[in-house]
Each structure stands twice: as structure tokens, then as C-alpha cells.
Length: 181
Image 1 (cartoon, helix red, strand yellow):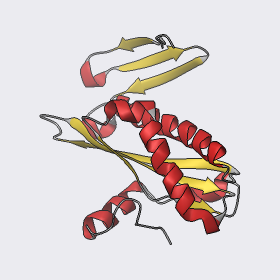
Image 2 (cartoon, one colour):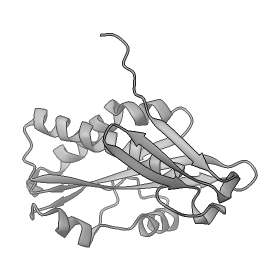
Image 3 (cartoon, one colour):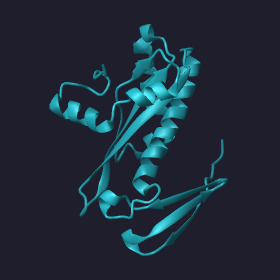
Image 4 (cartoon, rainbow, N blue to C red):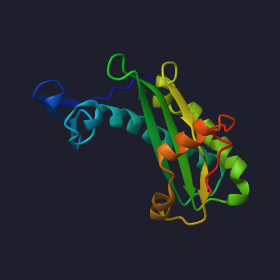
């Protein structure tokens, strides 16, 4: 297989953190700026959110294929993702990105198989693999829901800060051993 090329057009107005920009790709225009938490305008998406989105969108697409090939039932998928930047403001860098999948309409009796599939998807996700030498890229808790409705998962999804607090309070909990109630 040959090389693939992915192209985007960007524009920016203003200077530094006070500026705003736009990304144009095919039929999508996305407004962006620096996040408010880092002194930016907080308008549209931030480059940091886009990086976490790139990893999590690659992961969910890869997981979908892995689950299909494994013959595991799936109504739909949802992923909660969290990125951690350390060293701000001086030597800021992404230290960690965690993707936590929720399988809607899955077979709860086969939870271990879904966890194994989640790890295979982690290993096969191009964007995550590309970042992994420099950024800790991890799979968080794998949740299964009987309800195939994405709204049900969104209503019950753990927020990433609750997961981070739980893990930091109990270092014995691995990213896959920790389960939401």
C-alpha cells in the first residue's frame, strides 16, 4: 500500500492567545482558539481538544471494526476521552490521553471479551500508536450497557475527572480493573 495524504487549510486572525482561527477540511469548517484555561479566547475547539478528538475518533472507529470481526454484539459505541497537559505554562506537553469506551447493546456476560477487544483497538489505532512513544495512551474502564441508546450512555458516562480522582486515590486500580457502578 502506498502513502496517504491528509490535507487541511487553516486561517488565523489576531495574535497569540488572543487570536481565533478556522480549519477547513472538505465540507467542514471548524472555529478554533486557545483554551480559556491556557489564556486563550476559548472560542470553538482548541488544538488540545482536537488532539484528544483525533485519538478518540480513531480509537472508536478501530474498536468498531475489532468488535465486528470478533462477532461481539454492539448496538452503538460511545467513547469518553481525557487528555492531561503537564508543565503549563513553562514546558507544557501532553502527558496522557485516556479513552474509555461504552458499548451500548452489548452482551454483559461477555465483558472480558469486550475488554480484550478494547485493548486490541488500542494497539491498532494509528493516531494513538503515533503519539504513544511520547504520550501515555491508555484505555480506561470498558463499560457495557444493555440499552442501545447513545443518550443513555451520555447520561451515565463517568466524567474524566471522577475517573482520575478514583485512580489517584487508589493506585492499585488499573485502567481496566476499575469499573463504574
